[in-house]
Length: 283
Image 1 (cartoon, helix red, strand yellow):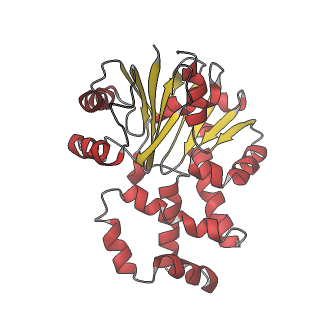
Image 2: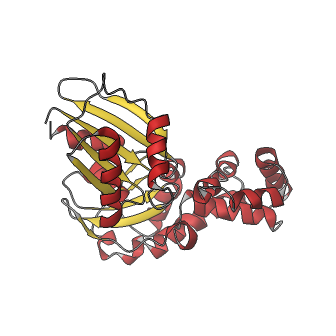
C-alpha cells in the first residue's frame, strides 16, 4: 500500500489526512459526519460540496475511516458504501470514534480511553481491540461530560434564572436574551447536540467564576461516575482522553483523577496526530 486516506469524524467537524509514502501528509477539513444524524444523501452532499478532493491530484489506495455514530456493524457497512460510491475505492475500513481514540492514544498498549467532545464515551482497550465498552445512550439520554451535556446545563441555568447577574449578562452578550428563540432553534436544528455544545463558549469565557467551575466539574464528574468508575481497569491502567472538552478543561480532568487516585495518561485535543503515527506503519 502506497497511500491511505485517514478520516476522523465527530458530529461537529471531520479531519481528513492523505498519507502517501515518502510525501508530506495533506490535510483537509469538512463539517461533521454522523450516520445516526444524517442521511446517506446528506453525507454524500457534504462530501461533494465541502471536501477539497481533486481526483486528478489526489490518490489513495485505501481509506481508514473513524467516526461518531459508526460503532455498529450496520453503520460501518453504511459508511463504507457511501465512501466507496464517492471515492471509488474498494479497500475501506470503517471504525467508530472510540477505536480512533484508542489507536491514537494507546497504540499497541493497554489503557482506558475516553472521548469528551460534542458527545462522550469510554472504553477499555487491550492494545489490539476494544475489549470492553458500555452502550452509549447518545445526546438525548447520555453523553455525560460532553459539550452538549454542558451546553444543556448552561441553557437551563439561563432559562431558569439560576445564573447571577454577571453570568446572565455574559450569556446574553454571546447568545442574546430571546429564550423562546433559543428553544425554537434547539428543536429545529438538524444537529441539536452540536447546537447545545455551542453554549460551552460561555464556560470558556468565564473560567474562575464559581458557578462556571461548578458546572464544569459537576458535568465531568458525572462522566467519571457513570462511566470511568464502572470499569475495574480504571484503577489498574492509565486514563487517556481526547476531544475538545478534554482539551479545554484538562485541569478539571487532572484534578478528578487525583481525587479518585487514578493514573492520568495523555490528553489530546484530536486523535489525528496519533492516527497518522499508527497508520504510517502500514505504508
